[in-house]
Image (cartoon, rainbow, N blue to C red; front, side):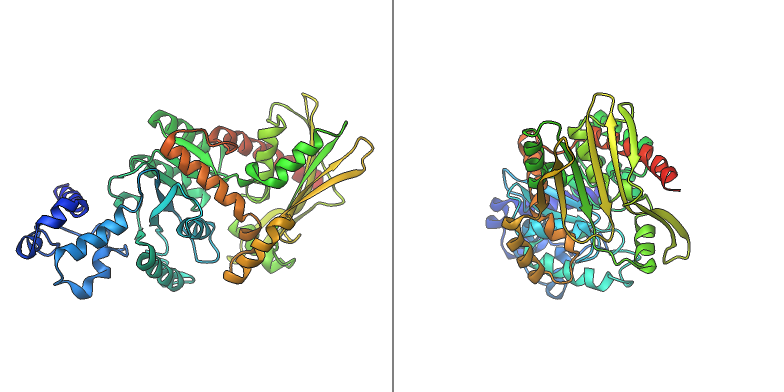
Length: 436
């Protein structure tokens, strides 16, 4: 505790322009890391200001103070101090792409000040993806002053309203949310589905409410252009029926799908198609109690049992289509295909079943952006680019909410997420039984 107090004191001094201007040579040395009893780096695994300057350990304190100021207090007034928890590998992890968007300044209310990555800054540092992550972390620290840590516990106290963006493994989310609440986060942006089970997600919701922490979800399709335009058009068509279609670009081979099934062991409805279920909960009155019937399209759908890389077998849908009717008279369909390509879309049919509207994501307006991003990040996951503007929209609204308290319009709450996960758990065995 004494060491942490000294760290805090040192950082506060480093941030103070009055101290910076008034202390010269001898006084500068008197509070340097080497001469301050009990001083220690914030994390032995982080890419810290001190490791960055280790070759110049005899430098004067103002240089060290300046480096610390840039890194640990980058968020300006009117910005949220963002902590990305669970970055993943460059070009592969969703967390990495969230980081890229913030570092490029595309979310004005968000300042990415910290990245917490336990795996690649720990046991995975020398394994697959580890060296690439390490190189990217060094480049990011040098270019932007972002701090990389191996644990949420290593975070100092926030200086601006803090938002945690949790993008780690679903199984780790309950623990990570608890740690982020303890780290004085005002808001938590939680990637879907939030937790492995409804029980755990409900407990997380109650824990956050007790602490007064807002939890908003990364259900980016809730703010998508194609969803909005489809819903608006459907309202103009008597007896209309909407179908939401989601595609991924996995190879249609046992090896590719087996790896997908194992990596996303929670199952398609809790993973890939969870965005569409969130739309149903948000806009079509779908709850477990309000479902009158669910019917699988057996001609479209496919379920397989395949071995993953570990050799263990997993049973999941590689594609699924179903229609839900609610007790309140609404009807909506969802289709998801692991091997269907990179684009998602929605259709509207009229009362005779004729398709009268189809809107794609990305549309013609956004395809140019997709092409530019593909050229800039040629080895990144293709779906990052098709959903790129929506990721920006959700992050910016959450960050602005963190700073101003204004409603994050259209962004799903953890209450929506709980019901969405309930629906996913209800539908999975029902649809599997229908496809046997």
